[in-house]
Image (tube, rainbow over the protein chains, first blue to last red):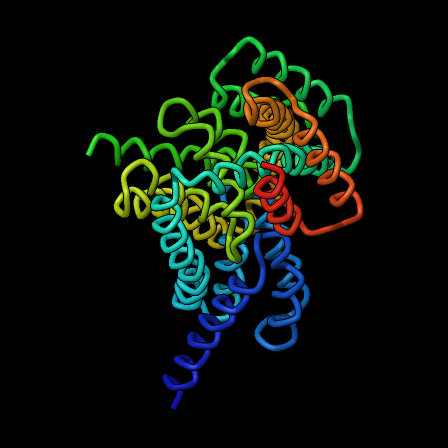
Length: 177
Length: 172
């Protein structure tokens, strides 16, 4: 009987993340949906806030960390695996099918036009997200501005990007209190 | 084999240095365009991973992996993207309370944010210019302005990208 309810929880977690990943397009936008589905049923609001906090704090894909954290709170290690599988499956299946179709149309003129229409929009979206990221520091302190200027100089002098990023992170550890 | 290992390492690196899908685009551009894939392929990868439902970061990784080495490349890229957050989450859950007190990890990520933003703006500028060989045409400018207005009005990014692509098809 006990084993049965556990199995049920794992399946529920799997199905929940399958659904969320089919209905939302990225990490941040999945948070609202996830909140509605999980708080009150499989975890408390405090646990949820903690999960969101930690998935923002650590490097790596937000959506995955959030899923694993929720899975862990609800069902321990097997819950984590169920949540991870549910999150990975939809994008994997979709991406692989789209990508194999796209490569067949590569030389079609309409696809090239589609891409040239996309380019300016992609650029604007990126600049927009960058601005939001920059503003996500609650108070725009001199440390943040200093790190921004230092990394700008780093990029302009073509220092390899990973090195600039690691340096910025270390500056954060030293400077930000 | 060499190429697969390279892909694996690339995505481990990217997932350790950025915190979300959109933020990883800047670093990925620097690391892949010109060496692993062309500019047009990269724009396709970014757009389609944003338009399709599901995690952006994973789809972008798989698209790049597929372009480089087919199905096996896509799977290796997926694995490289999943490994760092998984290991980190298990590490964090087990030492949750100690880490919260020390919080140097949080400061490291706070330090990353401004650098990641700058990188994204620089790459955004490159993508904007490359779209038409350095010359910014009227269409490009109109699409950019339209996208900006839509985003300021809180339109979802995937929708903005989809419409921009369609406008490109009709104007081209």
